[in-house]
Image (cartoon, rainbow, N blue to C red; front, side, top):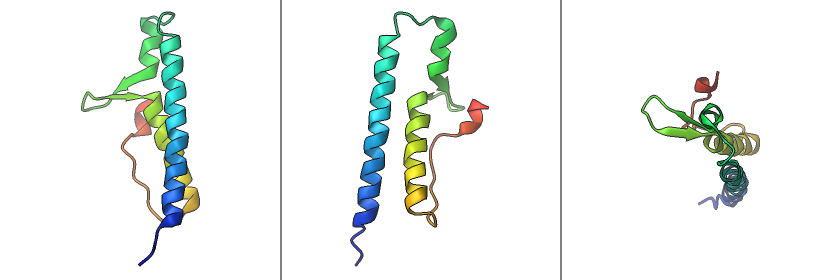
Length: 88
């Protein structure tokens, strides 16, 4: 039975990077909350078709994780929740 240690370590490293990104974005959003107005508030949070929120942190963390997995395991498919089409 395979141990999947390489997969585990790759996934953990990617999730840690994504977590740091989310933390940085959250701190930046809180720091600028008092300075933000209605025009800039919409840039940080979007609404999906199902009316659930999606943030810059959602897109960024998914991108980091998917890239790390695709680079480490190029033959494995990667499926994510967020759709970048709404950003176009």
